[in-house]
Length: 216
Length: 216
DNA sequence: CCAAAAGTGTTGGTTTTACACCCATGG
DNA sequence: CCATGGGTGTAAAACCAACACTTTTGG
Image (cartoon, rainbow over all chains, first blue to last red; front, side, top):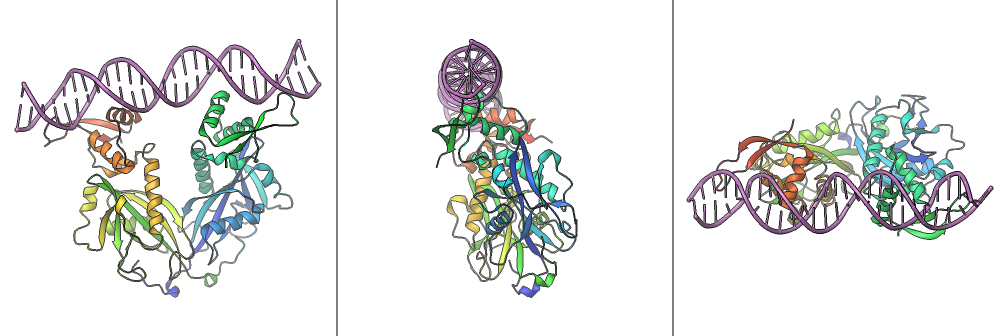
């Protein structure tokens, strides 16, 4: 920090925020991609992102980009990692702060109609992405899997009221493995994150499951 | 990513790397601080840091800054978190990518003589720091504690050959609690990270402990 | 009363913790 | 042969996973 602070002395360098917006839809963990409308990588899928404003914090930039795509909402949003390889963008030096966001499938689905550029890709069938976005998605999936059982992160993928079965489905989709029902049930209840509402699931055939909610 | 890429269009914005270099010295987890030689916060302690070069990756910048302070070495180095509040630096907009580094106490001690600006502060007695560096240090300590038992991170604080007692001392200093000896011993051996060398500690009174090393 | 899924009790195995003990060395 | 810390055996406790069973609903 011994350098001077003459603004003109700084080489052109930009900071962006890229968003790994994930959801669990029809049993699969999926990520939101946006087809690029211009060079480089025109027509190739990439993560949604944008420049950080001069008077905007990194978190605020991530929230703004999320709102652009999915109509704000109260998504889970957390900083993931920063990528700054000098060659990651062919045009100029761009450092990107990657964020990852989680949204229930229905809320995300509501934002998709009329947006031909947006697409939801299952994690096992992601096309080749622009820039280093493949690596960013890998980081996000690893982080999500790693935090799943010590953090109440999965609830961000469910509606406010949910059954334990639905919670287990989300966990299984994220981890890609089957889980034991009684063990899962007890683990979740023991963690103290959720409480029963006394209400029951409606509309199903067979015995209705109790609806739970996250404790406040 | 729909903006243009005219370099002149970018507001002055800088990217720095700040380093939380930690070690365990005489039973305490400590962090390396540098007294600032100029405004703002002149004379106040801050984390060592520097600007990211135009053709330099973030990791390379962190390595360079580490080498400036501690004579490169093979320290553990990992990206921590990025801080970009618009008001975090009064002079201009600076986004910083924080890294944390671990070094054995003796290697770090070798770099201190003759550097009046550098100081090693125990984690429980850190002076008020410049900018938002307090928050950065908090992040680093939390990360270190969290990773301690699922990652071979503690070995970066020990010499190549070490006793199990020394390893336990490092864990206790980081966590700030006492650990049970037999349980700790077995946990460490079960993880499969280390192996005995057959050699014994020299110079001590009483029974000499076996020296272990990290498996390759 | 049957099918299907919700929810629970019980068992058995694994892991972790704590305590006590034995071992090795220098003085 | 004593003091001290290194190292290990054992038993109690806690934890976890699997299975089987009971419960509840719609048809």
